[in-house]
Length: 177
Ligand code: 5GP
Image (cartoon, rainbow, N blue to C red; front, side, top):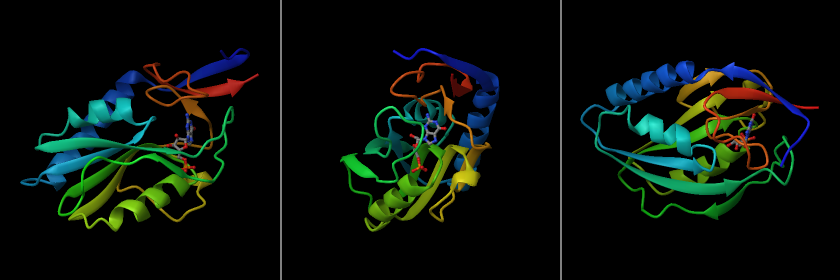
């Protein structure tokens, strides 16, 4: 377990709830009359995905893909993205929305975009709950963004530090003391 840390609440559960509702409504409007295939990036996006799908009023399917970019006990990305587990269905002729917890350097998303776009989806969009543009290395941006945040390491609502804190209802800044 971790000791010597402080959590500062940054985005409250109420703010998250209304933002996720807003994102779901926007996606519903943009894809009116269509079906969706949402692909969540594990593990950080699973709580966001669960709330997002319940705010989208369209027929949809959900799948998950698992990648790893952080090594051990660190708050910085290694920059090397590895595919741990692929999605279980083909993407051709589907409206794919990749659902990510946070875009930091952008290396994970640009890796996934390249991997999935060649599978001939009808359309391909990215939805990220959080965006840290200050840290961007790869030239990539999400089509749907919940909150743009400064360069701070955040946990909660699915986001972890060394596996912990995913269960927190608010998003907090983690300070290691
Ligand atoms: P990127 O490849 O954009 O640098 O990193 C994306 C992944 O890094 C995210 O899916 C997330 O798992 C992790 N990440 C980036 N910034 C943070 C952060 O502030 N907090 C947590 N918990 N994870 C982060």
